[in-house]
Image (cartoon, rainbow, N blue to C red; front, side, top):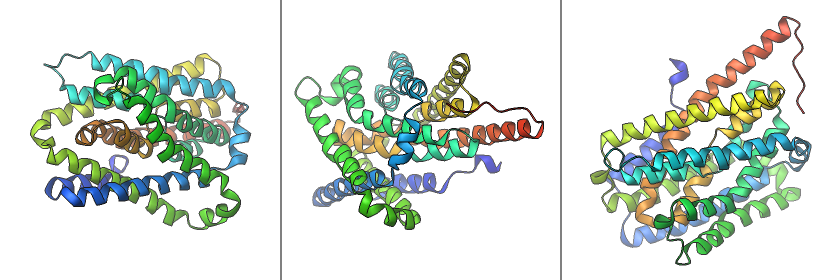
Length: 334
């Protein structure tokens, strides 16, 4: 049962949604929170860039086949499954939820949890750093492009919305990320010494974005549109989506003959979706009143991927330990 325990951040997310449902920000307060949210997102991605080790990225660049497979899962397999979900009739699945599931499917991979789980499982950490970071950087351009094709009515693409969304995401996410990475000469030591503080800042920024987004959704009648049955449908669809991707990435990695350390990277980086990138992207891509609905599937998926992949990471680690104890060689990573 300890494996089913919610992580602390998920608890804070749920509390934030509950607080927003009771006390959403309105009027001039909403304008103030919108400015604060923008500043928090910029700072968040600046720190993400400052934390990224250039040496680790360069060390993992050689495993190009691995990175292509991760990107294929993130921006190929996931969106195809999202299109399948979008074809579910409106009489069976609420169209807003279907759109949220599609948005989930086109997001980039996580960075921190993918690397952490790869390390726990005994995988190729350098390749995980490179692959997850590459996914996030490409996501700044790929996610809006996929949204323009798969969610044209929601994003307003075709009326200049796509270009505006890409510009907003690039200036809010990509430029601060690159600036943070370029500042490592001066900030790396501070980042290394204050990891706990920066994690609080990271999570606090996401909570602020969630509060602002859900405030607008609640004011527009979110909980009059979304029922308990809808929440169950989201959980079931998230679980099926994660199960299919985990199965496919594992089988394909083995079919291609990847070493176990590289298979771990494909499985963990290829099956994740980033809450830290997804919530700010939703704020840039969609009308304020829709952001809360669009990120609901992502919030469920966030907890589910952590729970399931933590169990998988432990199993990978146990298998590696058993192979070492039995004297069986463990293939080296690329």
